[in-house]
Length: 168
Image (cartoon, rainbow, N blue to C red; front, side, top):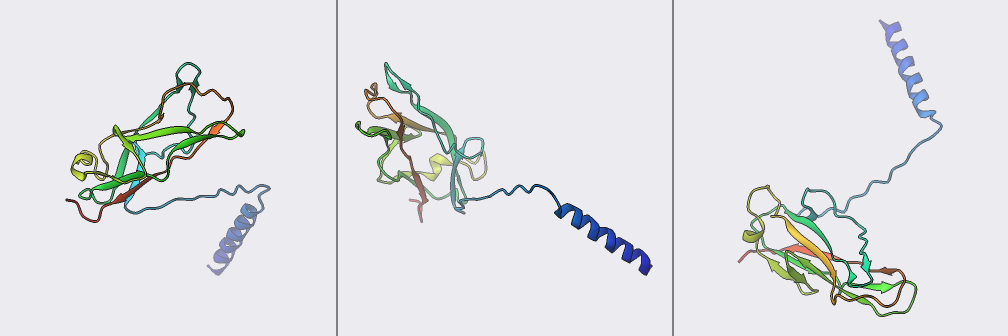
């Protein structure tokens, strides 16, 4: 019996050595931004895209971008405050040119740096536990018009949400 245990230990040790002698290792950095109370995700529960390409039409300006989203919450009885982190705009990265103001709206309501209340009773219908009804998230050029100066334009849209401590 002792001989069998020694052979098994030797086989396990050899298997470990052969696994660690790989010619290539792939390291994958994994990260998560965790808020245990709220999340804004696509309507199907997947993460929002971190990059959005807004297409410019030389006749009409930027084509608005829209995505169906849901607010996920650990407490469906609390109202949600929603705002943008700063005034959304695109800046010409090639230098020069006026900023292009953007309007961000959630379910048809324009978001500003001042928080707006979204009522829990309007958001959560119980159809999908912890998930709001589908909401249209839209980013559009504030004044729909062609952009005269060419080049690359960039900006960051930050959407901040917070559960209210009490619901009215």
